[in-house]
Length: 364
Ligand code: G3I
Image 1 (tube, rainbow, N blue to C red):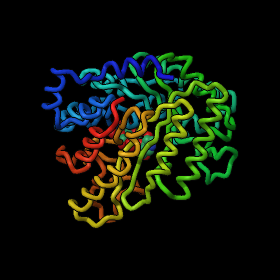
Image 2: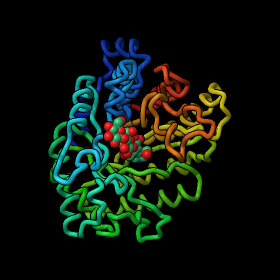
Image 3: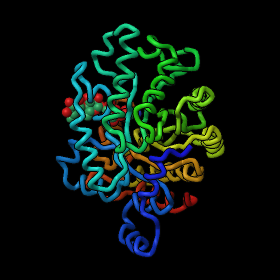
Image 4: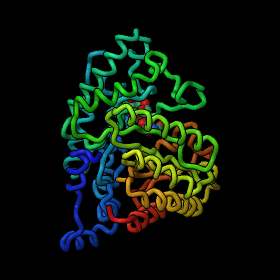
């Protein structure tokens, strides 16, 4: 089902006509225009502090991105750090910037076991916990109603290593509710926002490796089960945190995308970036291999009509989580070069690979 919000969002995108064709020529250096020319959207995750403090970054973000997703400011722990005290000020600032830049605004994420506020994790009793979750979802969706075009309602609920039924993650949410909180969360989001497209978002499905295969199976099972129960679910967010050197099989991944689409779901690559932690330090070599890896992946992804857009998790290497997170950073301390722009806001080979992948994509 294409939600009204998504239809409006696509209609808001620049349609290629004569005056726009000229603009495209001007915007040759813009991923947002290259994506929009094919009926897709491109955007990035961003932190309000970076937009406020770094004018060059803010300008590049406005030029390159057709969509904005808050990197952390819209998570439960950030909007209700103290029970009952709600702070949407940073989110509203980010929305205002997106509106000024004529960018779509993507909601991430209503519920993630890792980002519940500290007071929630103090093991509230079951009734209080479910009320707290559903109130949070209702309040947040109502606050942003009419401004968010897609919601990541639930993030990273699968963890096959936990050995639980349905390969669900054995975090506090599961411990308290079993799997019931999942359907309840989507229903609460739909009740509070009739138009936004509702997505399930997860990682680790990209490669021809045992763990990816297990995770793909688990996610398909979860999505099928939710659809069979009539849960309001419109799409799957595939995070797309790639790393050069891992084994990709185009046919395997194409089949997964088709299986998701066969459930009537849309797909967005929601957190695209390409790690280079095991590569030699030479930046030109790293840039070339990162671009080649991205091209291989995006050519498969963008060939699937159910794919509606790509969000990178950051726009510039200057502000990438990859360079600081313990599981992704390089041992030599060099900045990871996994995003379209370098630390000086200059396009890299990855930018070119993404732009040309958009150009090759079938028109939506
Ligand atoms: O909390 C402080 C806040 O008080 C301060 O004003 C602000 C200043 O910038 O920083 C805040 O600190 C941290 C924030 O990142 C900014 O660096 C938060 O404590 C920290 O939790 C937050 O981490 C984010 C993390 O998700 C957890 O929310 C990362 O930026 C973000 O890149 C990461 O993103 C996740 C996706 O949501 C899900 N998929 C994986 C991805 C990478 O881990």
